[in-house]
Length: 213
Image (cartoon, rainbow, N blue to C red; front, side, top):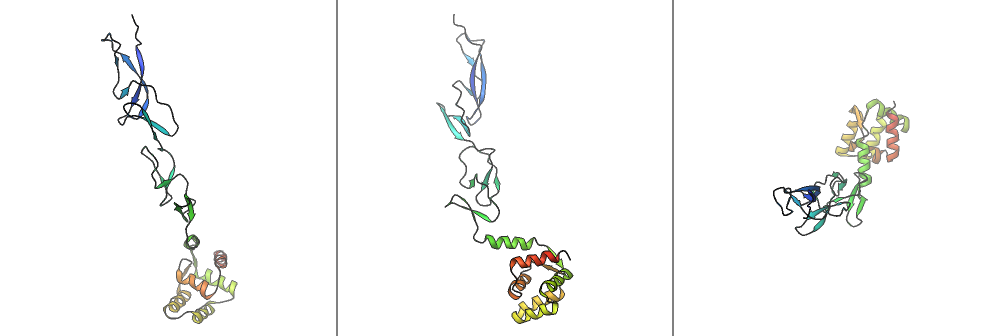
């Protein structure tokens, strides 16, 4: 008389036939023909081979292997932001595993990597100007006089020699009336560069020195 094992190993699946793990099926105590009580969502077949980065899916006849990127850190090619992968399968064409260096880069399909934006330097400068904050009237005008030897009247005179119309009116009023100077003010930046002919480094050096007054 053949002695039947009380249990046998079976493969447990989820609702999409993906392999979950191994469990056991008990011998049917009411049958005398070696019948086992296979649990729901389980199949009696060989355990699939483990493959890193893949999950096994039962096709009804055999195992096939599906890429599994869940939990990996990937980045949007459009924004550079982290994207959460929740589904099995190949990675979407819209993401990459390469992190974006900074906001001044964009994805290039041609190089399959991040490249600097054409206007990266302008964007960096604009952000630097935006982050410079503001200076009081005393700080700004005093430092310009210390560095350039020009008081407010001389600054206005320089504007009058170069600018005309509304541009002159705006910058003259700015020099004579504003209580807070800011580098992200385009009129003031243009005055410093186009009228006073100051370079970017010199402007920020003056700005930093003025902040200590």
